[in-house]
Image 1: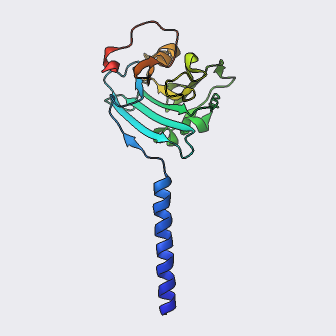
Image 2 (image 1 turned 90 degrees about the vertical axis):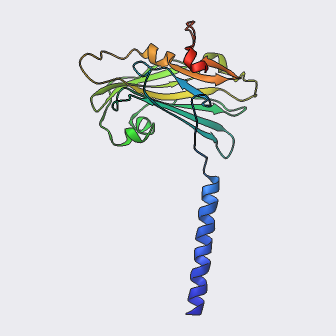
Image 3 (image 1 turned 180 degrees about the horizontal axis):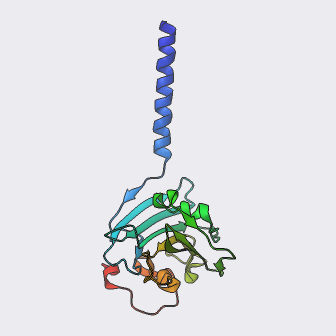
Length: 214
């Protein structure tokens, strides 16, 4: 009996140690303020929405640094926008994400148990952006994978590689909502680069909203 007790104690110590090691190796998740966030949003219909900003840090191999931003309507689930920003490490190469149902469900807990209806036919894709239109619980949505053209080869003062964005925007459901303006959604993604706020989707010369500079 005494030997069994000693064995059980040893197993307990090993399991506890393994749990601590696993926790130490997990990437940290930190809630941050808008002023601290690396990614900023100015999405259609969400000027007064509920905002969430998170910083996940670098992975264990320092290959990818991840930040997250979400804005949801103050009075319901739609409209909503959920965007991940990924900064690649030095010498890392970027590729477009494959936009499909699994990708949509990976965008956050909200999308894991909803009804997703995908369109037939090919997705819209260029060298720097891929978009996918679909519906979630009857709401029209657009998903996108995007990288800024000017940072295709890095160019950051930190010497890191390119930055990319994967995101979903869903409009408010209803017959008066109309089709989603993809350009307005893409123009609504901003990020901090070398101490300044920049647009993720380039080609728009309009001023950056003052509230994002604060």
